[in-house]
Length: 283
Image (tube, rainbow, N blue to C red; front, top):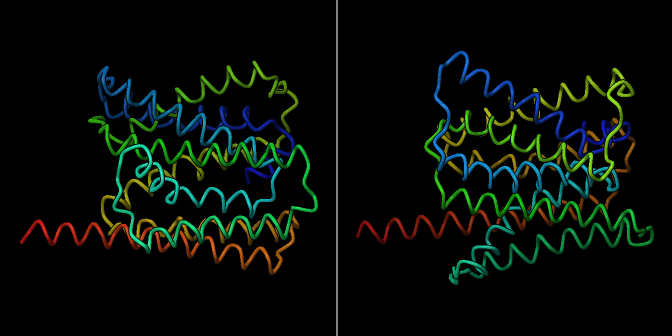
């Protein structure tokens, strides 16, 4: 749906409108209906950092970048965030206990992306394609940084309420960026179909998706809750081939399987190491 919408509205503008709608819904519900107080100052500082990393850099740049990339490649780059989380923790936080299985997973993930790029787009390389790749990679790394930051700075505010404030903060920053970079059009030029797409993205892509994901983390085992990382790229590739007439090639399928296998191996190795540490601590 983002790919369809950015064909008629700049990506940064799409991102801030979507986040403004979703964030306002979350904040209104908790402030006006549930009568929650404003988050504490410390939580606001943490939410601001998370908003810059995850709402502005990750969501905003990925929405901008998808205009220049095939949906399949963009979704695969996004699916690599568990791999970059491992790398960030290893490189910046000194976690040196990277197992052989984790290392193999990292190599497979990168190899899958390289395979798709070389076989599908290398011959069509252009400044716009490179620009889209850079935006998508920076977005993926920003989401990973946000994940690592959140694991070290817990928020006491209700997670759904906090998400609403992050979206509102992100919407304001993205609005400024979209105006500054001239990535916006007059609202009167936004078509009805585009507004429907924006409404769909706000409701299903932001509100319902975040509610479902946060809830799944609370009530489901982590391996099951993390299945979305494997399902999302597959769904995106299939829908793009059906709705957007993007080619569903053998190279894309092979590269997708290689990348998702790498993501699975990394997740599996992390869970295995965590279980091992828990067992050792109980002895």
